[in-house]
Image (tube, rainbow, N blue to C red; front, side):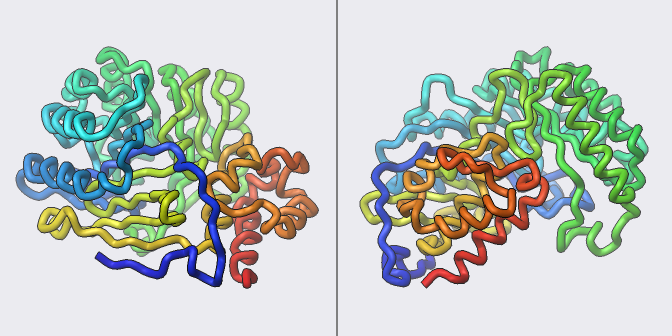
Length: 400
C-alpha cells in the first residue's frame, strides 16, 4: 500500500466536508475475446479458460478490504465494465451481486448495469443476467455498418447487433443502452446518420454516441486509419443531435442521450463528483472521508495476474485541495444542465469564493453560463470543453 500526504496538510489548506456523497461500486472484468484497435481500456485478450471462480473470490476479498472506508453507507448503483463482462457466466455474476448485497445495504430501486458485446455466445446469457439482478444492459454496438465494423476491428456483424438488442429486450431489460461511435475510418455523413436511425428504430432507453479518438498506446495510434474530414464529422454531429432530439432522446451529458427517466444513475454519480469503490484489476475509486477531511483516489493493480495474486493490494492518492476544483469541474461540466453551485462546496469541502476569479473569466469568455445559481457550460463551453477545463487547471497551477 502506498500513500501520500494528507491533502488537509497540503499548502496549509483546510477542507470542510460535512457529509459523504452518494456511493456507487464499479467492478472491472478485464478480459475480452479480442482487443479492439482503438481501445485504451485495461483489457486483456482471453487465452485459455476464464478464471471465473478465482476472480469472483478475489473481487469479494477486495470488497472486504475496502469496506471499512464506507461503513454505514448505502449503495446507490453498480456498474460492471471491462473488458467484456459478458464473457462471465450468469452464475458468476449472480455470485458477485449476492456477495455485494450481503456486505452493503442497497437502495430499493438499485441500478445494476452490465456491459455486453453482441456476440452469439454472450447473447445466450442475457436472461440469466436479468435473473441474477442486472437491470440495465449496455451493448457495445459501435456501428450497424458491416464494413465499418470490420474497419474498427469488431468481431460481431450487423446481424449480431440486431439480434443482441432483440434478445436483451426479450430477456426483460427495460433499460438498454446502445454504445455508438461516429467519426469512424472512412465513415460518410450518410453512414453516420444511418447508424443513428437504425439505433433509434430499436427504441433503446439510452444511447451513448461519442466520437472515435486515437488514444496513445493503441493499435490505431501506431497505425492511424484514414478518418473522415473534420467538416464531415462536424456536420454529422450537428445533424445527429437533431435526429436524436426529434426522436425523444435528451442530451444530458456530452455523449449521453436518454429517453424519459432513463439517465444512467451510475454515470451521473461520477459527473456529480460522487464516491465510488473500484473493484477488480486496474479499477480505481474515490472516497470522501468526513472524519479525516480527505478526498482520496484508490487504485488497484492493473494486470489481472497481479490482482489475482493479491486482491487486497491498493494504492492511495489523496487529492490536494488545490486540485479539487479542477477534478470537480472535469466531471460536473460534462452535464448539459450543469450542477447547482452549492454542490461544489458540498463535494469538495472548499468555498466557491475561492474560484470566483476563474468563474468570472470563464463567464466573460462565454464558456460558462451567467446564472450564478448553477455551474453550467454554455453551448460553446461544451463544444470547447477542454479550453474551459484548462482555465481551472491554470487556476490550480496559480494556487498558493
